[in-house]
Length: 411
Image 1 (cartoon, one colour):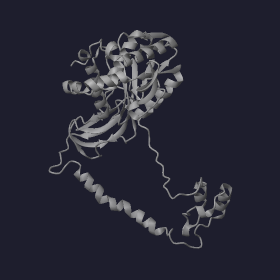
Image 2: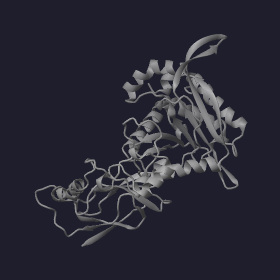
Image 3: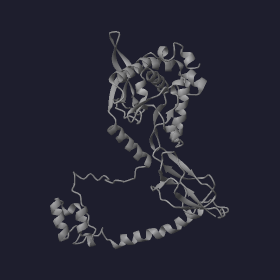
Image 4: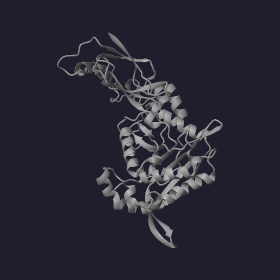
């Protein structure tokens, strides 16, 4: 019996996927539920499991865009599993046996083209080639001819590129690869965000002294109790959810001629995965404790790294936090993640000279940036939001922990 395997729908709004990688070869024997391919949608990379055991026949190439519901491969379920040897061993042996045949023409071509042997024709251009080289102001001695005896042909002259400087002997290769569907979608959304929103960015600086002191005092106890690190993201998430409740316009979106406001804070967290930027969502982050935030961020980051993140886990956020500081970024203007109206950019922490109580002191300082859609968020709300974040981060024990640090950290 021949089973037609069709592309399943990764999500309600997804109409097609792209075959990123085949994990099996045409003619392999596959087991039921074995991962046979990785497919890219415009939101995530997913594994495609075999629906039955049998011999597989591929019906699409890597890089092909395949509509949801289209046949992507055939599985002959009546075929017997090869005895003894691993399933892929026989096809691999056939490839090895055929390899010398594929290389034979290359060896003949090398013998048939005595480029290395110099003759009277070596680097001598044909009349047509000389005219083209003169127009390009290229010397024949700068070109290796591919014609008989090393003669420079018209094609050699057409393809010749004028020298852009003194040759150094280094390689000058290039490679052209197709962008994945996920990367193309990210690019499309970023351009749309720039073109379709009135994006503006406001900046501030945060004295991280208080957070550094809290982490130094409690991080070991926090890790011993919960098995988690006490990072910056829990402080920033708590500060952001508080500020969103104080300035609800920042937690709103535009839908046509209407504004949608939310009484919950679903925080999207930008993380770097093997397939590019991914933005999983922490649901109802305003209800999470410090331990809850750290645990959820760790869970989502591991799933993104391992390529297990789902479409549902990356949709529906109301505000985004992006931490470019882990890569050493000093300052940036983050791009809004549509249809959201705001994104907070964190950056690296650097010892800087600041003024405290009339004295110049050295303190660990982070620059923060809020990019927002000015169509829905006014300057008062955007600046007030960022100031609220700054205030909470500079006095976390009182503002974020209610004056009881151990209780807030569940120690």
